[in-house]
Amino acid sequence: MKRLDSEFFERDVLEICPELIGKVLVRKFNNDRIIRMKITEIEAYRGEEDLACHASKGRTARTEVMYHRGGVVYVYLVYGIHWMLNFVTGKENEPQAVLIRSLECCEGPGRVSKLLELEKTFYGENLEFSERIWVEDNDFIIPYITAPRIGIEYSGNIWKNKNWRYTIK
DNA sequence: GTAAGGATTGGC
DNA sequence: CCAATCCTTACT
Figure 1 (cartoon, rainbow, N blue to C red):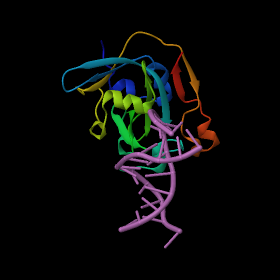
Figure 2 (figure 1 turned 60 degrees about the horizontal axis):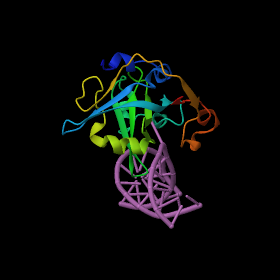
Figure 3 (figure 1 turned 120 degrees about the vertical axis):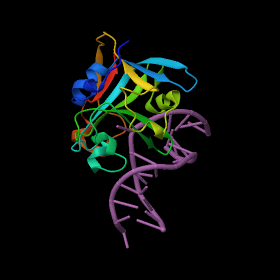
């Protein structure tokens, strides 16, 4: 199966999301156990102007990796408990990311990171070359629906109402 | 240095 | 409804 490369991720997040739905997330553990699961729910976070995007607070130690060109992993701890898994997208200095909210048989971003055993060492991991996490292409075009993003009430009307959540139909 | 709060979940 | 729990960010 073909692995999605940096070229795939170096595009606008809103162009990538419809194509990323239904692709296969692969995680290889230290003991060589491998799991493959379809991506079923994602959210787009797009640039400093997007007040729901962490990059709206500018370039900091935490958001630094979002300014890299697409194709690397952005993880961060939320509520002191859950590691959120994101893929950086866009060109260099175009801070965007896709939040992986659900996989088939695993609903919710916190549960996803628990299943995949993610933690801070995945920050900046390159999806094209990593031996422990990557995404595989398949030739399916998956029907999806869109809706507002979750948990961003603070971001104001314009941004909280964007239909930037993509769920497999 | 210190305080506030969050891209969530699970339990009461 | 609300606690858990800790890192990042912004400062009375």
